[in-house]
Image (cartoon, rainbow, N blue to C red; front, side, top):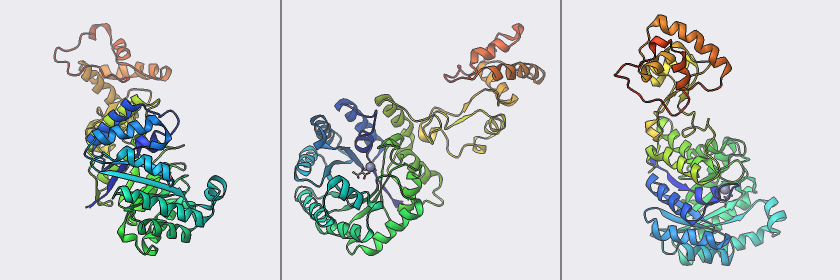
Length: 398
Ligand code: KIV
Ligand code: ZN
C-alpha cells in the first residue's frame, strides 16, 4: 500500500466559495475536526485576503499541532510575508504559493509575459524557502498551460526549493485521460521532479474531479488536495470522503492508504453543513442523506436479507446513522412488515396483505410516509404494540 498525503483545503478553497465563509471560531472548530479526522496537511486560509483570515490561520497554526498547517500566497512579496507570519508558530508550517501559467490568465488577468511570470515564481519560491523548509508551488490553470512553459516553471520552482508541486485543474476542464497524461509527462520531462512530491488539485466543473484525482495518482501523484463535502470554487473541489472511501472500497485496484479515520467522515460533513449555509445534496456519495437509504421494494427486500445486496460500504464505516428503509409508493411488503416489527407489531401475512393495499393507495398520494401514517393504517384491534417492541420510531420518514 502506498501512502497518499491528504491535503485538506476546506478552510481555503472551500471557504472562498459562495455561502461558505466562516469566522475565526468556526474555522478553528472545523480545523480541530479535520485534525481528529487525520488530514496530513490543513490549508487554513489565505492570510493576505483579510485581517480575519490572517488571525484564523495564525490561531489554527498555534493550536492545531499534529498536521502541517499551510497558508496560501500569490507570488508576491507581501503575500509570502503575510503567509509566513500567519503560520510561523505551527509545529509544521507550510507556505503554498501560486501563479497562473496559462496564456489566457497571463494575458487577461495578470497582464504579464511568460518571462515575467517565470521570474515572479522564482522570486516568490525563493523568499518562501528563506523562511520555511516546506514550500508548495502551484502553477494555476496548469491544465490549460503550454506544456513546455509549464515544465520550465515547475523546474524553476523546484530549483528554488519547492518540495511539493501541485498541478491544479483550476477550471475543471480536464478529462481523466488528459490529466493522467499531464502528470505522467511532467514526471518524465521535468529534470528535477524527483526532488518534489507531485500533487493533484481537481475542480469539479464537469463532475470529473474524483476521476481526475485518481488518474493523477495512477501516474505518480502522491498528494491529493480535496475538501469536505466537495465545497470549493464554483462546482467545488474533489470531495475528501469520496476519494478516501474509493481507496477503501476498491483497494483491490487502488492500493493506496491514507491517515484518515473514515468513521469520522459523516461527523465532519455534518459539522461543515451546520457551519456554512448548505449541506451535501441528499444523493451525495458517502455522506448524503440518501447514501444508505432504500425506497424501492426490490432493493429493500435485498438489503433486509443482506445489506451487501445494495450497499458497497457500511454506514458504520463512515460514521453515518445506519441503513434507512424509506417507505413510499415503490416499497414492498417485506419492508412494510419489517417496519411494523420495528415499531412492535408482528403482523401475519394475511394482515400485511390487506394493510399493504391501503398503504400503496396512501403512498400514491403522499410524498413521505411517517410512522404515524403506518399506525393509522392498522385496524383498531391491532393498535397495541407488543411489550417487546424493539425500536423507537426513526427520525426520518418511515
Ligand atoms: O484551483 C486552483 O488553481 C487553486 C490554486 C490556488 C491552487 O486553488
Ligand atoms: Zn482550487
